[in-house]
Length: 167
Ligand code: SF4
Image 1: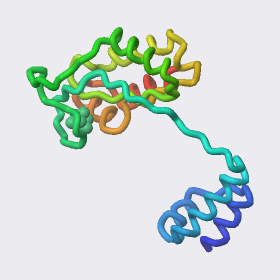
Image 2: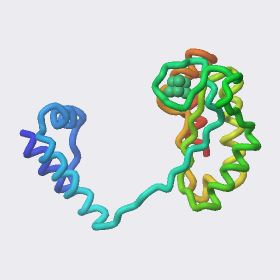
Image 3: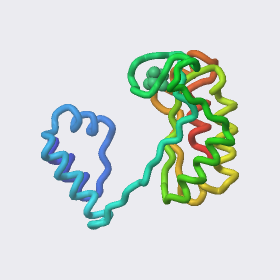
Image 4: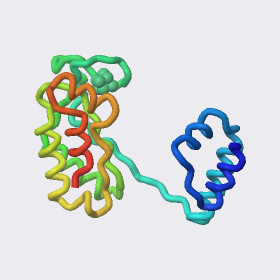
């Protein structure tokens, strides 16, 4: 069954969500990889692309303290703490763009100062400088950020997703 689904996908056919789940649960990893490789080569040949990614971190101060990351500190009194304004981050983004980056990965700790309006202003400024439309994309406020911001500061995960999609 999975062989037939993979053969159809390799030939450019669509697979249903149920078939995708079946592949996920039962298809041998090597067969999945081989099919995926054939699809990629059919569509793109030998072309390989990369993002040149840089982090833009507004702050490492975080009131959550979930322990997932290695960069957060719990208070501004910690000598390792940093907290940047929108202007400072925009200046830093300009330096990174000058170095040829193609993606900004924006991740920061969570405090009440770094809320949805802060990110709206930051993204609006990045857009206003034209960096996003020049090919710099922003991956931000994702994962724990969106959900936990929702819980702590009243913004919804959807709000953050919308901000992250600007423009
Ligand atoms: S919520 Fe994010 S920034 Fe805060 S400790 Fe966890 S991973 Fe680090």
